[in-house]
Image (tube, rainbow, N blue to C red; front, top):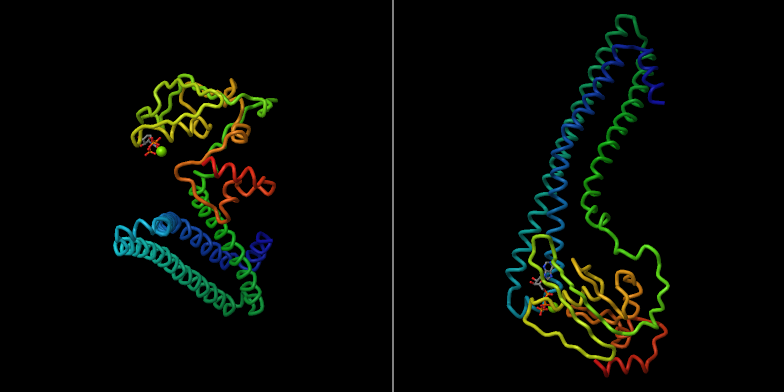
Length: 308
Ligand SMILES: Nc1ncnc2c1ncn2[C@@H]1O[C@H](COP(=O)(O)OP(=O)(O)OP(=O)(O)O)[C@@H](O)[C@H]1O
Ligand SMILES: [Mg+2]
């Protein structure tokens, strides 16, 4: 459709059509020149907004500690600084958009002046009728709206990549590995022995090892308390035993089966855990003990509460 419109414009007057095409090319070039600075400003805007929101949520979550240490004013001041940074970043983006809009207006204004001036001269010289000039202007408007719309959409799509990049960390995170073939293991029949064989774990390649070749056997019915100074790796050990953190070397076995073969789903069905930093969900204590199981047995909930 746009090509037909352009062909019609060239049919009416090649000179005027070239002016319209040149204006469009200039518009595309201006959009391109503005793109990188605008992308940079938008990125800054997203980062500042994220910082401000994280600070705010952290404050709401830690309000008790903030009050106990009387740090309300400091928290408020640092949050306001972040908010101002965010507003400034927003303003920078808005200013760039405004400048682009002005440049845009000037460009298309000049294009209109050039076309009407050239068109009027053609009419005066008798090479063009007023009706033909009007028809040309109608085609030119249609052509301008379509092509600038296309250019805008192209750059908007490119800008969306920026949002995509921000989400990539989450979207591209590998899902928890499950065993390739589902094992027909009757988890109810497994004995409740827990065995660790030469388990090693480090959080990252250049971090020191937290677990360095741990061997441990816990028999069925046995109660074991693991004690040690803060940071010695108790929580890490439990997370390795639960399959939340995969060991760097060694194996964890439940009832003689490696938890890698068992899969995290089966393992978590047979293991009950209360972590150090667990949170209570809105509901009763009984709801939280049964984790909102609609078919929970009240006697079992009571027994669990007494055991705890
Ligand atoms: N997500 C993590 N990334 C990198 N290092 C971590 C991470 N979590 C813990 N560590 C480090 O691993 C070590 C063991 O931490 P862990 O939380 O297992 O100790 P802990 O014995 O549970 O301590 P606490 O008694 O304070 O709960 C510490 O040196 C800690 O700094
Ligand atoms: Mg811990």
